[in-house]
Image (cartoon, rainbow, N blue to C red; front, side, top):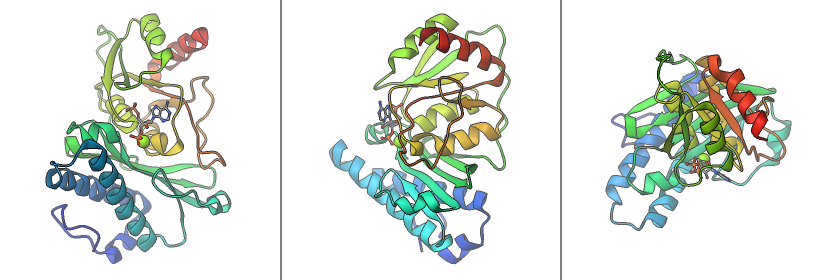
Length: 263
Ligand SMILES: Nc1ncnc2c1ncn2[C@@H]1O[C@H](COP(=O)(O)O)[C@@H](OP(=O)(O)O)[C@H]1O
Ligand SMILES: [Mg+2]
């Protein structure tokens, strides 16, 4: 059994029978439920210890679930040693067991669990659990992005704890409102959910921070690229993937133009 906290028990044999998309969703959901339960049970712990327990427990759940359900696949995780065999593998699960660790430990809702699958050159599926919103976003089925009111100013999601230098300039040039929140997954999800129109990040991040959110965003029809407009590439020898922009397709040219002018 993987989990007893999520309201229903999920035998590993049931996980094996799931499609890749359903497996990503179920593992993200289970890890999110585990994290919520842990935070309730360990509310007395100092934030540093709660972060470490959250990272470790969610990692353990995802690792055991993937080993049981897809024993032949490779895994790249923020919370595990990088097994370089992934570079020769056809299928690599790219996971961030707890994205927005800081916000999780502060009892906020803007954190996420990321589970993505990369297959022979590109992301093919992804799930982003948003336990604080009791939601899991997936690439299959893809979410419908709500329409935007043309008269409202653009809203730009940005890190609340370390906003990148470029963010202010982009927001000023676009006349956009900055909406501060934690977690890369939560910010991409804010664009998917219509709470923001774009997310701009620069200065440092890793493949696990964006893989699952980008899989969901692409499936939803959003633009996702590096800040210079080049493609986001995953399962690279160095998983450092320092910048990205995710936005509504209708504003992508304008956003990339503004970023280009600023760089
Ligand atoms: N400059 C940087 N260098 C490395 N990682 C960064 C970073 N800025 C943000 N991140 C990572 O991106 C995620 C979202 O950050 P933020 O909330 O500031 O937008 C966090 O992941 P984790 O919480 O998984 O560590 C954070 O560690
Ligand atoms: Mg992360």
